[in-house]
Image (cartoon, rainbow, N blue to C red; front, side):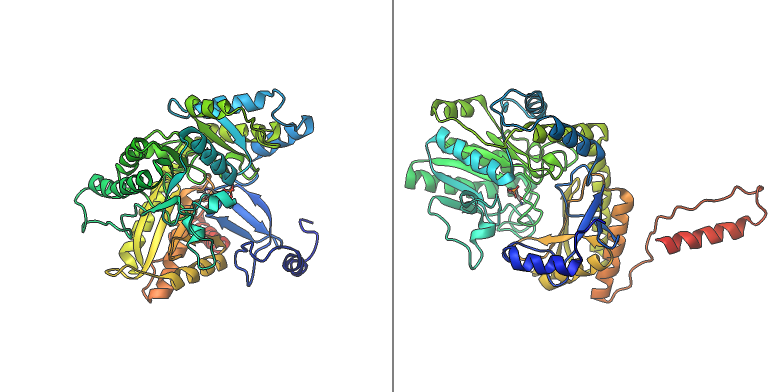
Length: 480
Ligand code: PMP
């Protein structure tokens, strides 16, 4: 009853009417997902998949509190922000409370792309400069304005040309980037400064060519570029260069915000910086399209002073705001940041364990529930294991676990699951990955550490206790 037509028909209609450029996972045998609950998704046959990819379903697929908030508000009113509404101002106040000063003015929009587009517009108006510095392999959205600053797209063979006002800085990737340990620097801070100096050079170039910098835009931890954790001190020094050159600093928190890193609500906080503009989206609505830009009163005033009104038909509508407020409720009430820290560090350390057993695992990195496992065919040369990564994704799908891969060489296994992910889920993923890696490198995987729920009758109450334990264990093993 959860589907309107058989899967084959859905595929046929999709092929006929949906642009083939739209990505479809597992294209030769796509999944038809009809239901989601917490960290699980179900296909039309009722098969259950563990979702390790969907950072949008932040507080878990179809969280009842979020669903109820949307349903209630939808039945009351959904209008635009030309009217007063409490949900909007409450949301603005709650978000601002999570930000350092002076970030205190919100604009609500509908997607991460829109948020970044508005951020760039604000930066242009405020600085009166045009040049933008972006990171290599970065992705900031699908709008034309965002493709301009997204090497992830314009670097592709068929991609558009990079505009001359866009400058690409190297990714601060300590494993595969331009500067690495221990070749180029002794400390992490030193490495961070080497990468920041690259931005300094681009600032100088922008000043020489066009009189100044408009903005530096970067994810606080680069997800699309392959789950990259910048070295300590990188953003701090980078922001200094950009500001000296008259530019503003935009932190794209679309993927990594809302507590995913566990220690902080926003990933930029891990680098001890305060951006001028922060953009957020994806997890904000747990699947409902809602996004935001938060900036300083000074930058917001420059926008107001143009006399050009800002209107966005759906941005800040009461339904979206009610949903975003409900997401914040759940993050707080279910202490999901603590969970991200606890489960994330368990996942990370278990992935580290894989590195010791499988030569294919070149690097393991992460923060909270943002983890990357980089696969290489040669550890010395760090040769990307692209085909192997593809094979693993497909094998994991057969095991009913959904993970993805990313990075310029598509060789980084990417984990960014809903924040309700459990240590048992992490164990299941790593045990399965262990097995799949063993198939590839011919090693023997250790027996899985299955977590079994076994009901045991206390000794004394049942004379066949040993037998009953054995039968319960057997049943639990079968069920798993
Ligand atoms: N910024 C980042 C870092 C993203 O990952 C994405 C989406 N993948 C966007 C911006 C664009 O967001 P949206 O797809 O909601 O427009």
